[in-house]
Each structure stands twice: as structure tokens, then as C-alpha cells.
Image 1: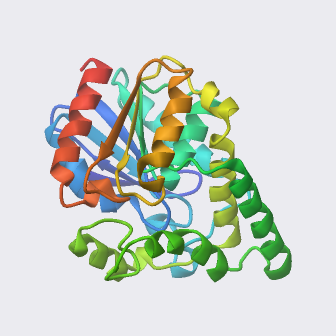
Image 2 (image 1 turned 135 degrees about the vertical axis):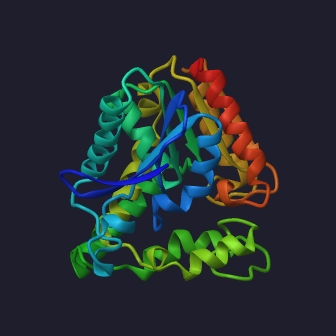
Amino acid sequence: MKKRLKLEPNNNNLIIWEAEQPKAVLQLVHGMVEYVERYEEFALAMNKEGFTVIGHDHLGHGYTAQNPSQLGVFPESPEELINDIERVTSFIQESYPGFPIILLGHSMGSLMCRYYVAKRKPPINALIIMATGQQPQFLTRFALILTECIRLIKGNKHRSKLLTYLSTDSFNRSIKNPKTSVDWLSKNEESNLAYLKDPFCQFIPTIPMYRSIFYFSNQVASKQVIDEIPTQLPILVISGQEDPLGENGKGIERFVKLLKASHSKVSLRLVEEARHEILNENNRNDTYHFIADWMTKNTDV
């Protein structure tokens, strides 16, 4: 059963995909320039495995945006985005007392979740870090400086084609003979075309959105923040073997090496024949089964 709610105080669009006989709750935190209902196929598959799935649209995304002009508009403080994630966790605690909670963050959402878990120690039972990045801090610091320079010249409402060109557009340039501007997302042509036709996925972010992304990227790249993640928390790091954001696995392996230095329950899965959106790939059903099995084994349900 699917339900839609509004989460105060920011009127975040909240979707609940209810399992008939739930054994745990999976909280979804989506990526940039998308929205949580893009995960419906995955959510329904998890329902069949006994997991209720709950996720919200970030500020400036999906149905949380009040109108098309609000798409890509972020608050001044990155912490407000973390506040929304925390509110969803609290909602799950209140609505499903006693049920294990697994937190899953994809892409931008993975950076937010890494920061959230390190800084606020939420009452979760497992963490899935999906399609993340581990950029060197000198690059993320440079990105923050460049973003601030553009802000001083153009203002907070500016939608920077330059920052888009240097960030997400660069990922598609790494794909050989791309058919679309978003081939880096997956090898599933149908999914890529649907993304290009989706009005919720066609905006250029404002300066505060880019600033937040680079802020989280810079924060979570540090060993200090990695070490702040609870050491006994079961963690699955999963990414496409051919994901440009994860440097085709190299950045993911670098992150996992740092994580394993201080954490004892870390699993790594690099999905073959997969790019950034492993949940939309041609081999996605195998990934669904793997994630469901991992959640079952690591939450004792």
C-alpha cells in the first residue's frame, strides 16, 4: 500500500510503501535532481521481502517544491537538509516502534547520510551507502571557493551552467560514444530516456544547492568524520563498477579502506555492468535481491 504525507515544518513530500507484514523499515534518501518516487520499483520489490520503505523529497526537489521555479532551490544552511532526514527518522520511530531501521542514501543522499550518521548518531540499525564519492578534499575545497566566487558575482538565485559543466556533465564526458546527455546514469536506455522526459529531473541547481553538495563532499571525505560514524554499525557500500562518480570503483575502494580502518562491519559490493543508478540498471533485480538479503542478515529479522 502506498501513502503520501506532508512532513512539517518544510512540507516535505513523504512517501510510504507499506509491506503487508513488515519486519523492518528502510528509509530512502534520494540524490540530486531527482525525487523519491523514482525508487518505486525498488520499493515495491522490498515490500515483497518484508521491508516497509519510506522516503521524502528534499527541499527544492519533486513534490516538495511548491512550483517549477522552486526546483533546485536549497536553504542557506546545509544543516536544514539534515534536519529533514532526521525528522523522517523520528517519524519512523514514532510510527513503527520496535522495528529495525535501515538508512539508504543514494549519490548526494549518500553524502548526506554519511554526514548525518557521523554527526547526529541516529537510532538506525544499518546503513547502506549507495553510489557515493570520495573526492580529494583539495578538489572539494576548490569547488567551495569557486561556488562562493560565483555567488558573490551572481547571487544566491543564480543557476550555474559552469558548475553543472564541471560536475555532473563531466561524468557523461567519460562515457564512450554516449547516446544521451545522461548515459552516465545507467546502461538502461529506457530509464535514461524517462529521466530526460521527467519535468522533475530537468533543472539546474541554484548556488546554495551546489554549495551544500560540495560542503557535504568535503566534510565526509575527512578521516575525522569517517571515524565519527558508530564503529559497530553494519554498513554496506554499494556502487556500480562503472560509475564515474566512484571513479569506476577506485574511489569506492579508497573510501572503504578508510572505513575499515575503524569499523568492523563493512561490506563492499561493486556491481558489474553498472554505472551510477544501480537500482535502474538492466541487472537491477540481482541488486534488489542482494540488498534485501544483506538487510535481513544485518538486522536479525
